[in-house]
Image 1: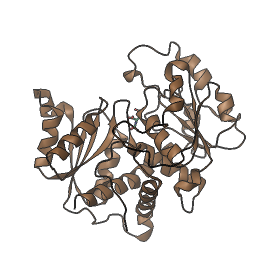
Image 2: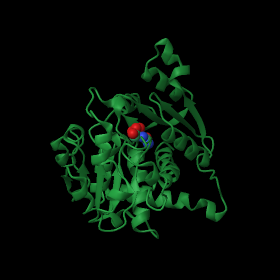
Image 3: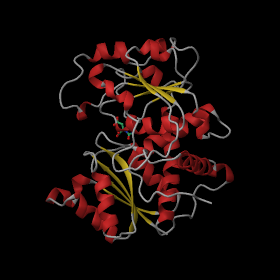
Image 4: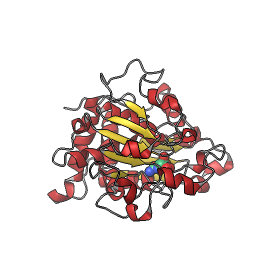
Length: 338
Ligand code: NCD
């Protein structure tokens, strides 16, 4: 029986180990579907899911839409440039329009931190039977990306079960533009929540010292941390030192569009110090997998050769794993509104 208690998924600070288990187990079942001869399930037939991306997206939006279609839901998407936003309509009125059409799950991406949470709160106050799933807000949170990263890593470490426990005591390094990354913030909740220790690696301008205390306390609106013992977060400025001591690596895009000033003066120098290449991976004690949420700046945070080396780089697996993970999330949220 499901113990699922989340009406909305805004970030992962409120996820318990049971929540991670439930999502990963469901994703496993969905991933195995083609092997059982069924490519599509009737589970959400006739239910409406809306993808409202107020900020550009390639993989997250398509992946949510495909996931919804594989569960036989009706999917309605929205493109800001050809919508009434251009005439001055607010995100709230856009959302209410889709709710009036009967949408039961809204996947919302917005460039400003907090917008999905505010919209969810408003809909709850109005007693609307609709769930909000955060598709990425500002620098705050990107839960579905962190969950698909978790799924990819647990499958790597434990290919028969892929359970969250397989991360217990492992060390995962996240390298690059952590300051501007909502993915890294969500990764920090999920990885430490499953007992992994995280090394954050990057220059001071993209990785302030206080990130080492990131997961020490839950956000103010949350009473307590559902995880009893989280893994540790440490900061390491030297990539060589970090790699010497890690079981997996997540590298991040330099997010220039989110920088208020030019924080990186020389991209070649950045690549030299923090760009991931086959050569630098020789600093690792053993063969480790490399992940990247995409989109990628080839030759800056990762070399083209490594990006295309599927024996080490799991980017393609991350993208394909995004579909069963998002099927699991949509399935769980649609069940709350039954
Ligand atoms: C990320 C995002 O939008 O936060 N991309 C994604 O969803 N796969 C990371 C990024 O923009 O660099």
